[in-house]
Amino acid sequence: MLIVRTTAELDQVEPARAGKRRGRRAVVMTMGALHEGHLALVRAAREAADQVVVTVFVNPLQFDDVADLERYPRDLDADAALLEPLGVDVLYAPSVADVYPGGRPIVTVSAGAINDVFEGEHRRGHFDGVLTVVLKLMHLTRPDVAYFGQKDAQQVIAIRTMCRDLNVPVGVAVVPTVRDGDGLALSSRNAHLSAGERADALVLSRALAEAQQVLDEGGPLSLALTVARAVVAQVPSVVPDYIGAMDPVSAAPVGGDYRGDVVIAVAARVGGTRLIDNVVTRVGPREGVA
Ligand code: PAF
Image 1 (spheres, rainbow, N blue to C red):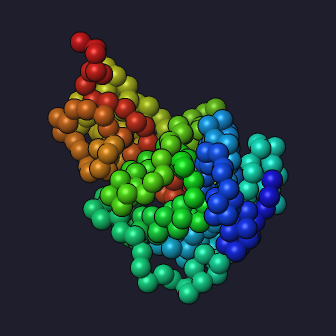
Image 2: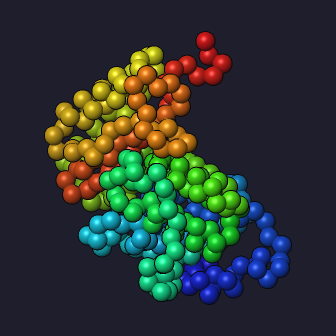
């Protein structure tokens, strides 16, 4: 595995720019602190592509909270040790100065209305920062396909929308959320949870499972959301930012008697740590089912 620290070096390992033929290339973009969720993305990319590039870059543009940026876990040696056995071709881990040589870019990508709901509403500027770095990393690594995790459901919607609206010629592949045996969705932020907080955080996946059960039994979305909110309310140390339902294509909030595919999403603070989770499901019968 080649470890590349600068854009200039990345240019040198880019055979397509030298006019050479290359196979299908996949990129997995990460902010490091890799866990099994990231490794599932890398394995999926490795299976589907000839070349796999993994990026590790903690993108300051997408943090609305300086303390969160500063305490974000960073350990490139540990990340490289996890990636090496998976057959990654290039690990690209640039510095902030390398990605943003002039400081904050003047021109950025806007997530538009996606900024006004759910994560966008609670983390001002977050999706603009995500889309700006994702587009830059797509230009720098030139993949055919980019892999993202379903855990960041609204991020996936924002990236798909950007690629569609700006004609970015990169496929977006989505890999299901990886969970610990007890249901907790894997996240780099789980490292900040105490044992007690981790136990409390399990209420999030439990609430989603109960909401899903309501829908599986033919109940309305409004009831599924009421049940999810009631389950989370049983653990007062878990303070939700939102528990809601979004259209899986536009991220627009849906509710009431909505029928169709839906993402039920939750974000909550557990102590000083903010966690998100979601389930992709459907309200009403699946196609072909009476
Ligand atoms: O999902 C993440 O880790 C980040 O938002 C991403 C896509 C690497 C952009 O910084």
